Length: 67
Image (cartoon, rainbow, N blue to C red; front, side):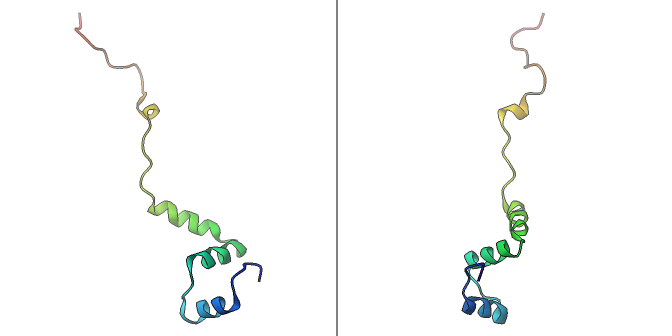
């Protein structure tokens, strides 16, 4: 098999939907569907953290007394 997944694992997956995650990813890779998992994982990831550059929007605030 091109995926490296055993025939027994494929039959079990077809029969009752049970497969280990590594085998599922191998099948997705061979079938050209690995991007589906990437998009799914992005929905589970926490929002990206902002960097200091994100806050650099114009001149810094003035400090001290205003005259």
